[in-house]
Amino acid sequence: MRANQLSTADQQRLRHLRRMKTLALSLLVIAAIIYLATLPVAQGGGWGWVNTGAEAAMVGAMADWFAVTALFRHPLGLPIPHTAIVPTKKDEIALSLEDFFTENFLTEEIARDRLAAANLGLRVGRWLQDEGHAARVSTEFTRIARAGVARVGDDDVRGLVDDVVMPRLAREPMASLAGDLLSAVVADGAHRGFVDLVVREVRDWLTRHPDSFKRMVANRAPWWAPDAVSTRIVDWTYNNALDWAQSILDDPNHQTRQSIDDLLLRVADDLQHDPDVQARAEALKSRLLTHPQLAESAINVWHTVRDSLAASLDDPNSRVHARVRQALTDLGTTLVTNDAQRARLETRIADIVAFFVNTYGGEVSSIISHTIQRWDGEEASRRIELHVGRDLQFIRINGTVVGCLVGLLIHAVTVLVR
Image (cartoon, rainbow, N blue to C red):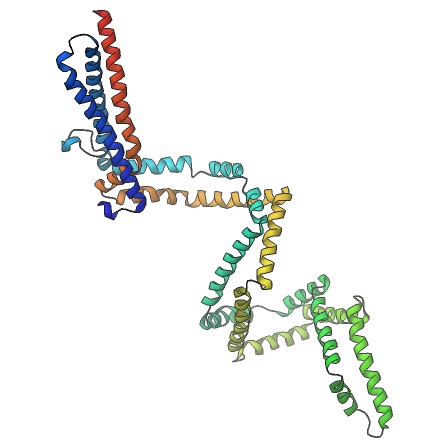
């Protein structure tokens, strides 16, 4: 592996490794120079101590150089037994690393303990409370949603309608289900917004088009009625229609609302229990599902939804962005202030992590062994040395210093014994 083939980080590691090797070698050279320089005067006095210390420092430096070098290659290229450990024992080391990683990191107990200690719910809540963070998450969410919407083509919609939706609807009896759904909608009052929308549109139309309404009513007046009478009746009808629409909007308990609820409940009951109504509903469903324009209509509806959604996602000031940001901020506040909600979230996260650890932990940890086993022995040695070789050079440096100190201690004992 040449230096110009290394990544920027590995090149930096290589420079540090070479610097530490140079330092360790320099200490060995200095110890050798001192040893040779003091050898002629090493028979007595203080120079004997210096010579002995330098000699021991060389021995310590050479021993530790041999130990460190033997990990990655044969020292001096000599095939000495139990050297070049990494290239020759690469596969065994890979399996040992896999076992170590599995036993110490990828267990359910450890994963749950780490997650509990991390207080993820509280951290996420505090992070989301910051409007800038919520805006960032909203931007990423809408960007992903925009890309997903753009990838759904007409063929996808047609295939979903033809192959999934229509066959399933054709098999399932829908009348009773529609009755249950309609009954639940009325009970929950979910239809009231739609009623308000329809009545509001009627009121607005009447407000904007009084002449059109009066003309429609006047056209249905008897031909023999005097114009003055017809005009008064038409005006009275218009004013009452406008007041009626406004009164419905103002009164949540208006009689018309109750009549609509009663009508919907009767329809729901008929769909659930009346065989004739159920048969007519199923026949209507069959006609709709077999209509040749159904798939094209679904595609046209999808185009409308897609274009509207894409426009909202592209506009950072749209209601979609605002609601997503507000929802994220509210979630953050809930996680910070509501201990029960936070505990439930952390429990769910822990359950998900535990599932993946128990199900796929072995496969994840096997990536380590498979990756190292695919390396060439020399390549594995170089890669590992790049990451840990710099720290191992401290062994050589320490060996030089400790060897010198031990040599001086032995020399002191020798002098005392003599």
